Image (cartoon, rainbow, N blue to C red; front, side, top):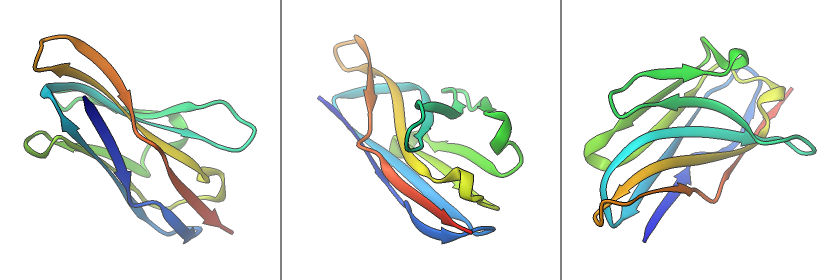
Length: 120
């Protein structure tokens, strides 16, 4: 019913920047909160940044001041601008959304993940 498709990952040197995008499509009435998670090899998935439907944001401590989450409600898209990347940011990044469907049922969806690799 709903798909979240991420793009923008890749390989970058330490200190560099990347911008991730996550576009939602399908039977969407509206999108409530949207988040970015990441999972490094051998580690649990962790919440990186969140943004509410009203635009309020929250960040994991290690990315504060370096990452910025934003959204375009007209395009049902959320972004993650990542600056001053560090090798420890290397992970698969996942988009997550809480969607109100056209049936007025709320459900949660995940993207397929996009790899971010930061070389030292």
